[in-house]
Length: 310
Ligand SMILES: [Zn+2]
Image (cartoon, rainbow, N blue to C red; front, side):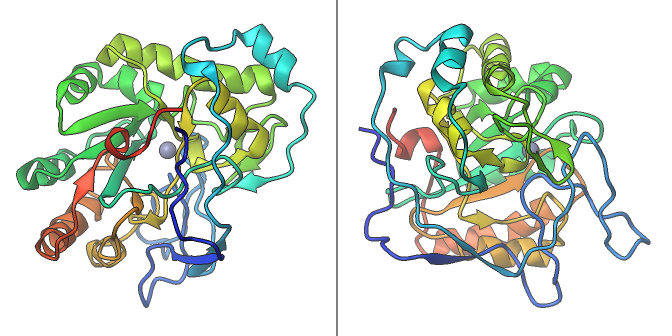
C-alpha cells in the first residue's frame, strides 16, 4: 500500500528529456510554444510556462521512497486543519522530482500522461492525438486544468466517461505548487499552504462536476513542487505524479523529436506530452512511434491501473 517506488533502482539515474541531435534546448513540462521566425525562442506568456534551457541529459534523484500511508482519502483534512498541520514546515527541495513525487511506476506497462494546461492559448484540443490513441487502443491519463475543463465541458464529460482514458487533476490556476511562493518559468507558485490547498482542491471540485468524480492523481502546473507541498498533496489523498520521459517539451517539438523521445518508453516509464496544442508535432510523433512500440511488445496502462491508492 503506497509503495510506488520502482524496484531495483538504487543509484542515480540519467533521464533523457526527449532530445535528439539538433535540438539543443530542452524545455520542461507545459512550456510555451516557440514562435515562427524567432529562431525557436519561447515567448513569455503568463498563462503558460516558459521554456527553460536544460542540459540534454538531466540528472534526477532516485525515485522518492514511499511515504507512510495516511487515512487522507477517507477523511481528508479541512483547509484549516491542513494549514495548522503544514504552516510551520519549511521546504528544502524545489523541482520536478522532489521527495514524495512519483516519476515511475513499479508495473510493466508504460503510462502515457497528456496534460491540458488551460488558460489563454492553452485550452485547445488536439483531436488528432486523441484519435491516434483510440485507433491503436492505447490508454492514457489526461491531466486537465480546471480552466481547460471550463472551456471544454462537453469533451471533458465525454473523456471522463471513456474507459480508455482517465481524467486527473492538473490544478485550479495551473500554478507551481509551493508553500512559499516560489516561481517556475516565470510563473508565480502558490503563496502558502492555504493557497496550495485551493490549487489542489478546487480542480477536484471541477472534476467532480465535469466528469462525475475527483482524481487521486495530481500534477502541478509547470510540474514544479516543493517537498512540503508534495506531502500536502498526499495528505489530501492525491499522489503527486511527474514523469520519466518528456516526449514533447510542452508541445514544442517537431514530430521526429517527439517520436524519438517516445520510442524510449519501456516498463514503468511515465511519459508526459500535451493534448491542448493542436497543430503541434505531438500527434504526428505519437503516430510514428506508438505502432513500433506496440510491435516491440510495449504495453500501456493508465495511472489508476498501475499505481496503488494512498
Ligand atoms: Zn500544464
